Amino acid sequence: MIGLNATVAVYTPNGTDGDYTVVARASLPCRMAVKPLPVPTGGAGGDRVELADRRLLMWDADYAMPDTARVLDSAGVYWNVIPGTYVAVAGLTAVVGYRRCEVERVLS
Image (cartoon, rainbow, N blue to C red; front, side, top):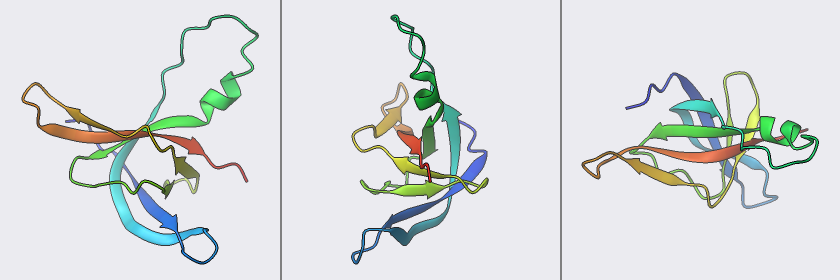
């Protein structure tokens, strides 16, 4: 099992204006990891800033992250969960040990 050394608050959009104000989970133990950079295939590296604003969010197997969510980390930074990146990570026994998805920093 990975070390869940941080927490985030999970928000979902409200039904009125779509702002992320509904608290789905006030404190979710997690780990926010820097996403490995892909091997360069050319170009001047202009995508690096964009890649720096993406992370992997990992959390306990028991929590089902909403399809549309935004998380707030302990530094006060909001991250949008990227739909279609959810993975249930299982070990050799096929038991899910943790879940993960990609998140992208919300730029204000």
